[in-house]
Image 1 (cartoon, rainbow, N blue to C red):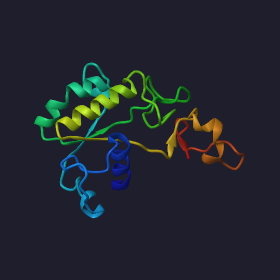
Image 2: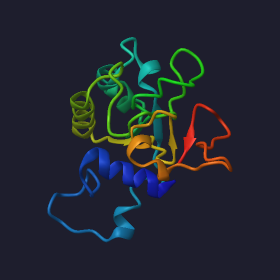
Image 3: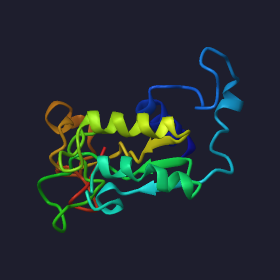
Image 4: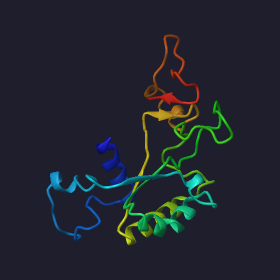
Length: 167
């Protein structure tokens, strides 16, 4: 889990050092990777966090989270979800259709960048809740890389849950 969170930190923030380290200085990996120990990790579901229900609403709520002492945010999946075989009105957040895109209902990639920049300005970190081994049945990789997905004995994409395919 820690490795996944650190990977998400690098992907989302575009940096490989803690926010409180002076740029250009070096730090051992063992020390650098300890930033999360003893710290609060607060998961935010953008659709439920603010009346706007999007990344801009999360950005507007950063001061409140900072006042509550939450220096590290984890964003619940913000990617477009599968358009087929999904339960409920909004589907399963982990039945992702494209891990490289932002769900238009939650904003744009620029909105995500603005959120991360605003969080950094307040000394906060932003991580993404990413599960690359789960995908919706219409994931963009299905067409180009069908071999990335598990199959049952007859060759159909396998999943114990029909709304999620396992890579």
